[in-house]
Length: 306
Image 1 (cartoon, rainbow, N blue to C red):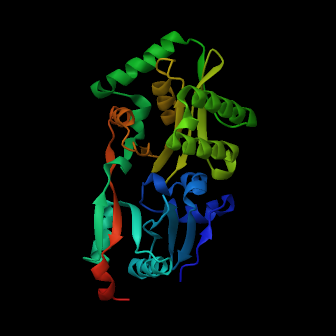
Image 2 (spheres, rainbow, N blue to C red):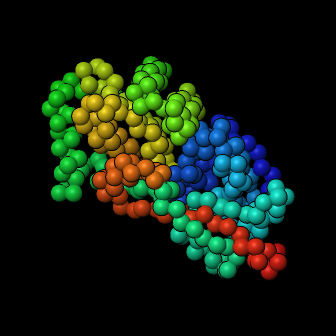
Image 3 (tube, one colour):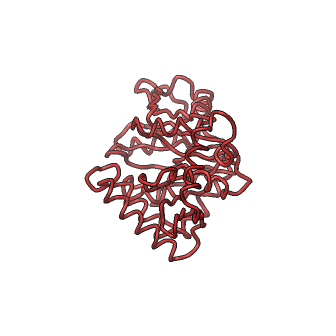
């Protein structure tokens, strides 16, 4: 049986004991994302027979994530189908990668329908590429970084480690939102709520981040946390767009700061925003992680082997 409960800060160790030990690189599985966006999705979790299952509501629609763990996956998925039926809905899973789709097809063939939405694909990069910017394909990024360095002799990247750093990030976020009219747009308004929660609970969430200064003024900040043992997720990156090279510089410096054990950096989706897509592609992702919406086929229910 699946007994779901709301996610809280105190659940970090329990949840990450599953996610950090999995081979999943989805940004959705970062504890920070799960917790910081709970206000919007009412995310809950349950444990069963070596698996953790996440359940949430996207735009009022019930959805689940693919179970994370080891054991009898088919048994757990069948319990998810039962849970969805109790909610009066057919089972829908979001964020299912191609590898997860193969797992589902192997244990429950012809049971689900699969749809890919390119807007929600994750962009995953080699940490080494973002940290070093070597080669012709990164020439433009190196130019941006070099122009920033040339224009700002007195610049520095500082890890976020003190309450004063948090205050500086919160102040910068407020100013950034004024310039970009965050509160007039649902997407950026929701992101703002998640960022403020993240900064105010930085240590409890297990976040790592950094601030970029030019002439002792904050011009950018960023933060994220590990998704699994080899992939680090960058969840937030804000910079003053009037400062040339600030985005490229904070990106490079944070990649250099992220611990060496992480081979990959997941910089999340583009949400179908043209400018964001161009920016993410310009950093030459190693993997564009397509994610499926998985729906239980209505004629499959009667044929399931419970």
